[in-house]
Image (cartoon, rainbow, N blue to C red):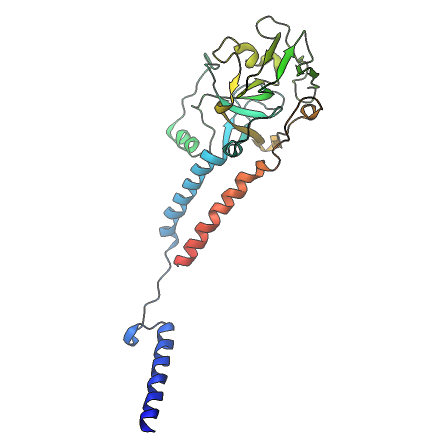
Length: 288
């Protein structure tokens, strides 16, 4: 009976010891010092670093700001507007559609003779991480009129036709402009867009050096799809100009063979950015 009692006491001690260790004592009953949380000033550089990395990733893969340098897209876009460009959709194989406003790299020296700016160090850094539009990249912004396989034609002052269908462009062509220009330097044309290319025109038809006036370049005025940065989805600045940039209804008419618009992609970058922040917050909470 005595040995049975001793065995029971040993079992009680073992349970008590495990309970004490779980409450904050180490082996042998030594107390553990609680880990102090880092001060705000020690956390700040880490948070800034995370914010910069996220901003750079968003600019590279999701959304980038661009500044409008000219009047070629009036009145849809005004000189000085800031637009946000969706760069995510092309990563999933989507190609530009008729009616979209897109930003693209200069295909073949379209910007020759245009004035350039000389940004300071701060502007260069902010544009690098995507918080300011880039002043050095040679990019243009126009509206997609035709995609691979389309036949586009301008006769007289218009209307502009795509695959034989006349476009009603009154909702976006600059007031007082005609859809087609009557000059013989590119305003009158009939072209067929090769696969893998797009035909672009500015909304200010009489003040836009676009596909019409670059038909002597190596792409015959076409823009390679691979040179498209992304679709402009919203005017973000100035505040009183805030607006979305939808595809005009004229591109939905029967007979144009238009593909369905990729609805919903405009908000996808913001959602993915939020999803990227959540694991970081959770990980840091677990470490404390």
